[in-house]
Image (tube, rainbow over all chains, first blue to last red; front, top):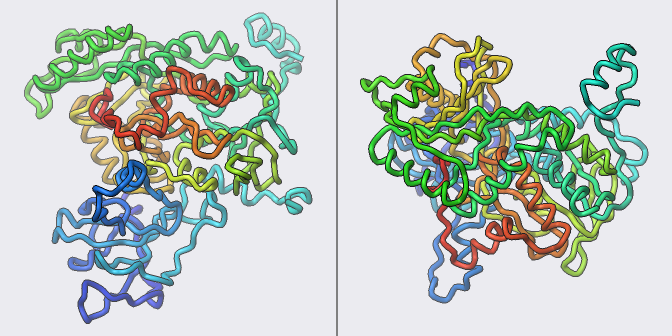
Length: 160
Length: 417
C-alpha cells in the first residue's frame, strides 16, 4: 500500500499566505491527503496528526443570553461541507501545535494551511463539486456515481 | 413470465432453458410527479419504499438514486446483524429490525442469506466484563436474547479465537447474542427493490438530486439531473450526504461524514463460525459464505466524502484482528474500500420531521446502520405516511439536540462507535 502515500507537489503559484503572525510568508503546497505539511515541522504523515473538526467556530461570549436553539447550533450543528472546507488539525505526535487547514473534502486535496485565528484564505483554487452531491472526476473514490457523468444526456434532460 | 422464486419454478425454468425469468425489478423512468419521493437507493431507502407501499398503500412513489441501488453504504458494510444495545430506545429499534430480519427472506420471496450464527462481544478486562454483564441484563429486560460466556465457553463456541492469557488483551469472557449474525447485502437491496417495484414503486437510477424547491415552508418538488419532479413529500435517506441534501432546504444537521473502511481477505475454508467483535482492540470480523474474512474497525477521524480513508486505520484494524486471531497472520487481503458514514454526536440516528413541511430525514446511522435496515425503513415509512413519528421513531427526532435531553449513547452502544 506504500504507493498510496503519494504527494503532488507543485501549483506553488496558487497562494502565498500569511502565517502565524510571522512576517515571513509560507509557501503553500498542494498535497494529497496522508501527507500534511506542518507549518513548523514540514511534510509529515497524516498519522502524526489529530483532527480538530470544523474551524472558525468560537465559543459564544454571552451564553447566558442564548436560546436553546442557539446552543444546539453551537454544540451540535455542523456544516459538514462537501467541497472546500476549513478545519483544525493538531500535530499531536510532532510539535503539538494547532493550525487550520483548507481541504477539499470531495477529493481530499489540501489547498492551504494557515494559522489559527487567521482569516480564511481567499482564492486558493479548490473546486467545489459541480452539483451539491456530485463527485469529482479525480480524487473521489465514488466510482458508482462518477460513471453516470459519462452517460449522455437525453433531450428531455437537457431541457431540464 | 416467472415472477415467484421457488424450487418448483427453478425446476420449470431449468427445463425451459431459463427463458421465462423476468428482471427482478423495473428500472423506471422518472414521472413528472409522485405522492412521495425518497432520495437515495440504499437498503434503508428501499426498505422505506417497501413499507410505504405495503403498510401504507403509497405506491405512487419513487426512489431516486445517484448511481445504482445498493452501490453506497449498503454495498460497503460488514453486514453484521445484532440488537444487543444497552440504551432502551436503541434496543427498541434494533430489536424491531432483528424481528423483521428473521422473516424477511420469506416475506420478500428472496433469499437474503440471513445467517443467525451468533455475535460475540469480547471482554478483555474485569471492568469490561462487568459492563458487558450489565448489558446482558439490560438486554434481557428489553426482551433481547443475550448471555454471558466465560473464556472457556467462548473457546467452545468459537474455536478459532485465541484465549491465551499471555497477551496484551486476553479474552476473559464475552456476551453472545445467538440471534445475531450476518446476511447478504445485495440480496437485501434487491429483495426490497423487487418487492417494492412489484407494488408499483418507481426505482430511478442515475438520477442525482440537485435541488429541492419549497414554497411557504413546504416542499413542492425536487430538481434532478433528469428533470423536475413534483411531490409534497421528500424523504432523505442518503447516509454520508445527509447534510448536503438537508442544506438544499436550508437545514443544518448535527452530522459529520467520515470514511469507514472495511476489507476482505482471500477466501479460505470455514474457520470462523460466528461474528466476533471487540471494543478494546476495536475490530470486528466474520467469514462470508465465499470464505473471505470480512473485517472492519473504526472510522477515519477526519471529515471526508472520498470513500477511501487512510492507510493507518487499516494497519490498526489488522493489528487488532491479529491480537484476537494470531493464526490469521499469513492471510492476504484482497480488497479494501471505504464508505461515508454519517456520524451523530450521540451515535444514534435521526428519524425525524423537520422545520420544512414534507421534508423528512432518516440519517445519522453512523457505523451501525445495516443491522437496522428493515426497522429503520418500517419506522420511517410510518413517519412519512402519517406525518407523525411512531413510538419507535419518536426518540430519534432531531429536537433532542435542542431540548437538552441527555445525549449520551456513544457510551451506551454495544461497540465503541
